[in-house]
Length: 82
Image (cartoon, rainbow, N blue to C red; front, side, top):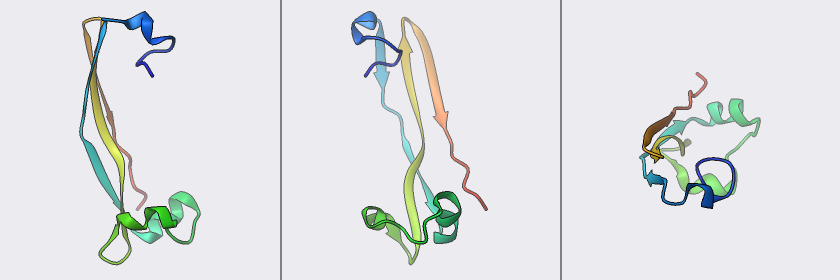
């Protein structure tokens, strides 16, 4: 999938992608309930639970890329409800 809408061939030779860090966000079970409406963490997320009921998810991160010589950086920070 390309950075911009349309076929990737439109950007052939005109873009570069660069990896960015993924930053973990830690949620208590109460915060998870408020965000999702679920009473417990689903089984597929249990591998990310530590220290009792703390769930760590890759919800924050940033990506940098260049399209036709223009550099862009997107920083995605998620605020956890208190």
